[in-house]
Length: 304
Image (cartoon, rainbow, N blue to C red; front, side, top):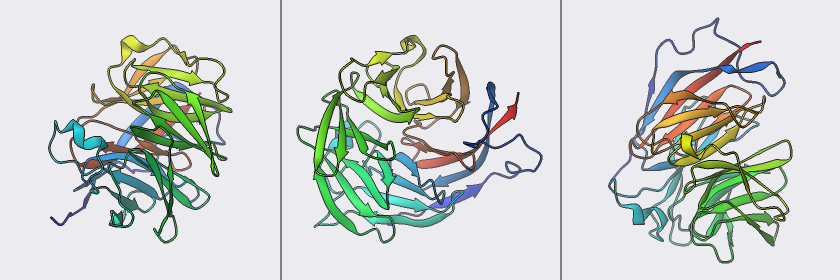
């Protein structure tokens, strides 16, 4: 079946005179003043799981699992060769609906977490990390993760690639040909970095954890498990605010830098998954796995 992507502009979301846009160089944001406005809906995707932003250009890469109907959970981690990656221009304009497609000699299976480092796209595929050129989309040699069973999210600290395995409770660090296992929380999913520290959300325990990069200390939970049901994505803003997606509760939630205060940012149906943020332009890209679409929001904040 041919996939048709449709981008729907939400009129009025980009009006002038709104609050300052998120910027890494502006530290004066306040936790209570983060707001979002709808910008765009992109439909016609196929179980989109992750949106990763290329920081320099603001382009976006979206993983598509392409599992069949709702409820077919086993298809989310299967060597079925149905996955593909969509590419968007800055702000959400579609470049190619199937920028990289599954091929016989380079299959994409249940593609989930994506990150980009030094001109290479890294994508989680069951028990290996697929690699492809940002410039051409050409498949590069994959990295088989030893002992992996359910690779989920991918993230970078600017030096290495980290991938979570939701079935083995491990985080794997890739440094060239070297692989290092780091103990993660139960069923680790989204990964993010801030201030030289790694943070990971747990699907099973419904909490955010600080994870020791050296794997010496056990993961430390924030103690917010009673506030969530199914944490998937995680990002951290320039003021230290954590943003998480709760797929089961259909919401995007903010957690203050103090790791105690929690407040709703957005209620959004369709199963918000591993979202991405364009920090420089203040854009939030939210894949909706049950709705086969991607929602784009403007993220703003009024200063203190």
